[in-house]
Image (tube, rainbow, N blue to C red; front, side, top):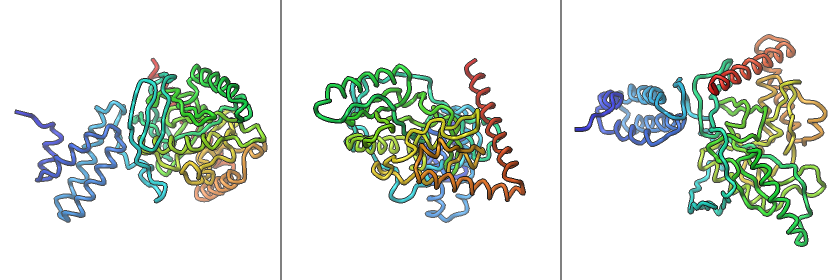
Length: 384
């Protein structure tokens, strides 16, 4: 005789049908807590429309509550406050998450249904990924942590470059190999795309990589601090300090199929695929752009993403960071527009709070420092 879990017994009693069991079984297959809650809301909403009966109203509330309670035993989560669907579910039409699946996996490489091949011989472990789920209004470190990546940060390696010509192929290969070994030792990125368009896994996707440093991003639901853990790092073997185009066509193609695969695998929102220049900050002087790689000319459209340079920078309007002439010189007109939008957004918020802009900015900066300190203390406590 089998014994049903207590939560399921209550669920079945509320439902009065086999629908509850079907929904519960499907939900338990989803390891990620956010995706599980998103599925439960969608499933119960669909059932509500199909049945149009009052008995579904308590079930909707119960299913979501049961999912939140079940997070206590989820390996990805430490404490279970209620959640809403992740912002990645709010996708615009032609930037929907692609459908890409693995075709072959060996000890040396992986291939995927969209033509992507990843070389895995150099893959190494680092610290397991764990990052806080912060709302855009959070003022203290939360109890809920997540282990699935939320986005991608694109980088350039700013390494030695040789002319991309047939006569330089041995030189190009040597430089590329030395670069891969260097970034592997530093655990610097999750992926490197070399100049021939070969994708190399460096740090395994389940772990954090040392790619973003002090950094800030936000989507329509969540706020992210220090993106080493929350975002995947994808670096191009390239330099912005050259008169030549920084990328080869092979690199652009590789970036497109890699981005498709990562978005498919982790349900990443297009708005969370951004460049290092958009997220990097310097807490010492409260300026953005400690690193400014891909401050301009990133081929968002060519790799299947919206023009994400147009997004106002959350570091400015949520935390009161500023920019200086050095950052402006290292970036392009698209980001300049985003800077103006972010400043205007902050001014409107100051007006709504009936505060001078300077005072409001100071309040935002205090919020950043308080959050950063709380997270630093939380990490120290976990390490002990």
